Length: 204
Image (cartoon, rainbow, N blue to C red):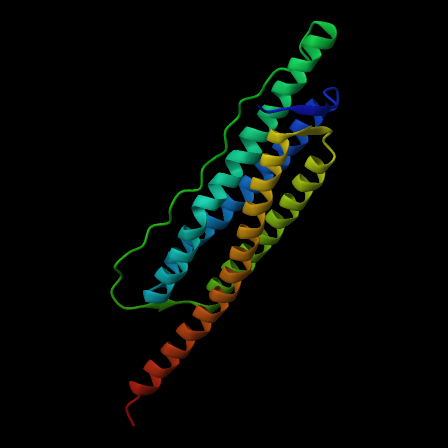
């Protein structure tokens, strides 16, 4: 049987709102990052672009799980609990429950392009933009964690939410680092391929 030991229901509505708003900001950053990679196909296509797209797509299930947790599940739970205890304490609800849902990250398309295209400056601009979005997302995750740690709600459900958030946060942070490294490596390899092809095609 689940048991609740301690709860501060009066602060919960504000904390729920803070978590939700920071989560929506994170959601927005990730949408922009994925749109940037999708649009980058105009300036980079070929096998290595598809490899990068696959890495971004591999991260999507964890990202969407995190967004569901922090946009929907945790704030909804906090608001529900606040109302339950408020009704028990003073006979009225504390907050209007907001059952908001995140904007899911959609899979990036891969294509069977013939040949390759790579515009160095444009691709590098996208890489820098995506790196900034990753950094902003990590800062948002840290803020959400800090807010949640201040919630006075000691229960089995609270610990389950915390464990799930921590696991997803760590997994996504690792994915960010790996993708940043891979992005740089794939760019360098593509530049080298193009240079080699131009050398091979030079007629003396």
